[in-house]
Figure (spheres, rainbow, N blue to C red):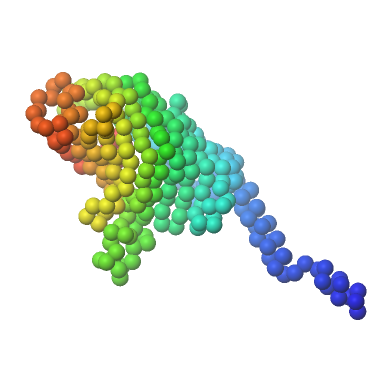
Length: 278
């Protein structure tokens, strides 16, 4: 009897069998080819050209049809399993396109996506693919940019009036900055090219709430922390641009007279239209 009791004590308990099965299933999922997942869940996406690796670690060649010249590059990821404890799927991501290189963390939730500590540079060749302008050969430096964007799926119809500001789609968190040394910019308008000498500027990112909308605010400042303009992006991907007299004074053909902090140009348009997407 003592031997039987000792043998039964040494047998693995059901809990350990369950833990072992869960771990086995998890590692099996992580070893699944990333290309198979893309084919299954996004079979007709035109933006991904080639995928290699698995869920844990891999890479993909991407292409975005901006204007007449597609923007292409490579994205590499390394999964962060501890992000599952926060209810999110997270990975360390590196994005390359010609001389552009960005690195940070990307997190996906049920009704949100998030970028943390994204840093690097956006090369002038990449900028030229995004806008049909004459640009200086100077990159934009990206410094610790963090964004969190909520979707409207988590809004409750019963409490929409009381919690519309809380549940509105848009940017609930934003931080970091972009810096650019500037230079001469030529942009076409009405069959003519207008030139402006852009000063060295800094773009400060923050989240702001206006009219029950969660907005991404991009505050444009010069080296003396003087206001050059403001950009706002809402949850419907609408872009609001406001430029001040101080910035427009760098345009030789501009003859307006106003206090330097006065907004003299205001434009509202879809965000992708501002990037030259047809």
